[in-house]
Picture 1 (spheres, rainbow, N blue to C red):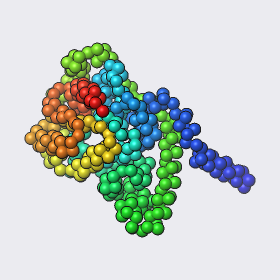
Picture 2 (spheres, one colour):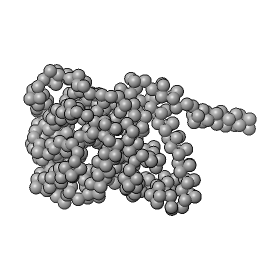
Picture 3 (cartoon, helix red, strand yellow):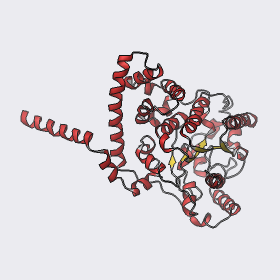
Picture 4 (tube, rainbow, N blue to C red):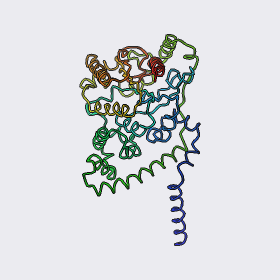
Length: 392
């Protein structure tokens, strides 16, 4: 019995050692271009919480990534991925984001990819509902948090020092980060320029670098088995060889078949609201105000890291569904205060942006209560074409 147990222990140790010391270059060689292409539409945490697959996608010279949250998986014929493929656009795109992702998680992702963002054109969709009074909470932060990217930040010596300190200070407000004593020690050591607990801090940095290498190895192994991509729901005839106006008409017809209520909400989503007791949503947002939120500081981190990386972003300010927000009790006047404030933030940052916020009552621009789709995608597709055509 003892011998069998000892043999099992030796085998386990040998396998673990092999896992740790197996050359990264060999693992990367097994990750094919087809695996990378599949990852572009699978919207898996293995992509946006990792680094390697994104690195491969960003290194493609004609890729223009699209960052956002839950709207990105609203695939239909007009979705930017389908549009770029069907129209043989000079660029391809891939999506990074899912429900619950907000500025601080995107910051970590951008920070980990800084070396691949130099002169890279990217598109970033800003969601109004991020800018609540409390900002991003633990409920949305924790499942979207990347430990690998957080550890990478501690060793990112090329980033502007003040920007890195601001980010670390913000991240330490989340319990997920504070509970990681090694990461917390490294951040505090870095934030103090090595003055706080110097011996403990240096030891933490040594241990942290080894832990980061383990996380990188784990990311590579996960990248060997990417999930299948989303069903694209493509229909090239609606967009290929069509003018912008024709695409808009096609999107309106597409949406009209799927919406038959006064709130301009896709019928299946509307039915879910009815099943949840529709009347309880009346006036539910009368106290909300998207002009005052800690999210603005997180959003500034996104702007600053993209500038630090030398990227060429296009920010997209989208509206809410005006019909639905009227019912929710969030008045139009207050909504426009948010729209105006966001426009001012983007102007002050001196970055490229497009403002779609005058479309909040435009049928089929928003597919449900908050998600851009159908007609909205057509407008975004055109702006992405313009952004790509601008001289580098």
